[in-house]
Image (cartoon, rainbow, N blue to C red; front, side, top):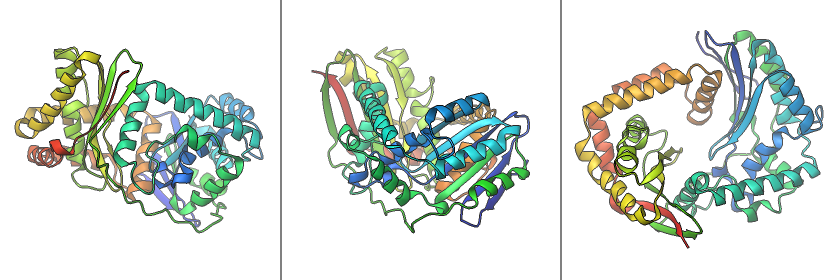
Length: 409
């Protein structure tokens, strides 16, 4: 069924995405609030604000009340913060759509930000940061992104911030940050799954009166790439870890389709080149995976792996060597397999209403595009081997490689 796009009088974009065959419906609100837009005295605040969404409203004063109400519906819920956006969602059934829309509206417009809850969540987030610091599997990719772009004047490239950023956060700072960035003109609401156009009235009812308190505009972000090429960290570890990146393409670059396919060929699944060579052939690592990302202004191809301490240099050399030759030996068969993999994974995800909500929400909020899933898949199918070869030769330049590693003390 066709996606229906509308806009509320206050500027909020609404997408109704009916998907036949699904029992579930996901209601998701997307906000252009993200760590990329934070100034140095705001690091970690997008993530902190997201944490506070489920902590109490004027109608539902405590987190316990919110949790019990959501559980009583058998619904799923969560929120997530990225560099360029934050989103909040509830997945439920069709008869609960009105309730889910009202719940999200209440949390986003009537949160009370109780002082005690702010202090408690401050402790929770600090423990989360410690967890990332202690576990390279989860935290090293953030360290790499911060290493790449941390010299930029605007932008927190480690989404949760540092302990020093969080320990002094108070209620006033949370509210001030919210008021600065919460803007109806930069908000998208998607209802996807077992839903029809009649649900638009529910969104209008609960979100139609929302108005931004201040005329705020997102800061212009000028990304500065690190001049340093290597960063070595020493910790008490049994296993060495490294993350490597080269500058690549942004999500508004037409080469993004070739980039995604190239990423799959290199390290996107268990039959990829690097997975086969480093884990299967040499048995140097348990995990090795892609951490590539695209932003509005830039992007990077990245890889992360945990390897035997005494074999780290060998593994790093193997990755660099593969990057140096991939532009010369890509095959049509590899491209076909990458396309088939992408198509298969996408079709599996289509069984979830949350996939449809996430897809359209990000397209509409970040790219200002209503490109359908089918149209996007056609772009991948039309991508040629020559496009991948040209892109590989353009971005995989050894002098542009940035490397961050964790070795034993």
